[in-house]
Image (cartoon, rainbow, N blue to C red; front, top):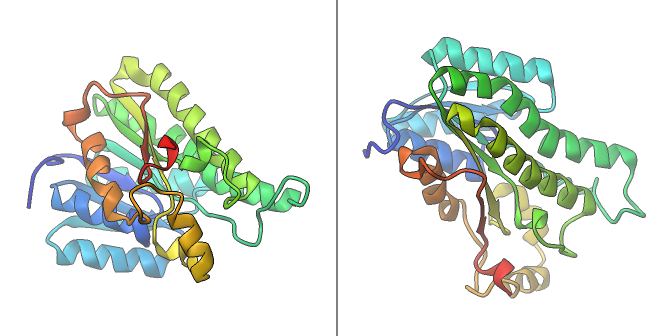
Length: 255
């Protein structure tokens, strides 16, 4: 096991599968004590098992990031379990398949649900976690946005675009505000990753190849393509990095 995150406590939302699971495992391997959270208790406990199986230390706390009471309870549980918090990895999110679409076709209910999870969830977790980071003498907030927050795409619904664009703007605002407390806030913007969340979108072979063709590196990403940057941003190696927006996109935003 490495020790780039030794002594740190990290809270990871959306940790039941995909990118959140991969980051939870890697953070623990790097020495962090990890609080895994997700609305999916079965998946969250599977991640917990995998972290412990790899020799890491973790706990699982079920939570709904769209509910302030649930987020408050989550952060309080993290503090009770480990006594401090140094890293917040805001990963919980939904694509909103079946809810999203073009603005002329999108229901208010669909819009609200996607914004509640993808943007309000980031706000609520930051609202209640940042005071603990300040109390710890500083720390790192890592918001998972998307290239959909940077560019337009016919493959993502308009509420999803809006939610991720909001995460990008909120990241910069929080970075400017909390730098005086040594709290760094950055965003990771992946393009399409092959994870359980995107599996249904990628079932059609023709559509799959169409999406692959948008990426100059010639493939879609995986959760493992994100974890190295996540560790860097969580660690003291990025001590002079804040307000940065990092595309992890196979070159998609370069063309």
